[in-house]
Image (cartoon, rainbow, N blue to C red):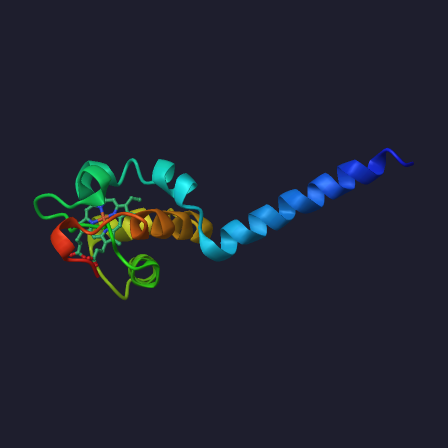
Amino acid sequence: MKRTVPIVAGVCLCLAAIGTALAAGDAKLGEKQASSCNGCHGADGRGQGPNPPLAGMKEAYFIQQMNDYKSGARSHLFMQRLAQGLSDPHIANMAAYYASLPPPSGKGK
Ligand code: HEC
């Protein structure tokens, strides 16, 4: 019976870590998850062509835009389809990642 104690403790720690990631967003995970975004949004999310920069964007603004695309409150065919496939924790991670980057030439949102 005594052997189960460390396992239970380990599970609890792991759940706590997941809880933190849900609440705040993990920038490291977000960096990996955002690699497909940067194809359009530029290296390090600095923006290119018609694709707006994401680097330096405030987390709350980023999450709001993604949720607006999801719900259709903000319409853009591609971004809506994309956002609809993303979970809330996934979006929170990317929000943390982009917020951690310096905005290109000082124009952050
Ligand atoms: C095919 C190119 C393309 C890809 C890939 C792409 N985006 Fe976009 N994204 C756009 C365009 C174009 C816009 C501007 C749309 C509009 O006018 O609403 C945009 C807008 C946004 C905005 C709003 C920016 C603002 O200034 O309000 C966010 C946030 C965003 N994208 C996040 C992402 C994330 C996160 C990913 C990856 C999961 C991603 N995008 C992948 C083309 C792309």
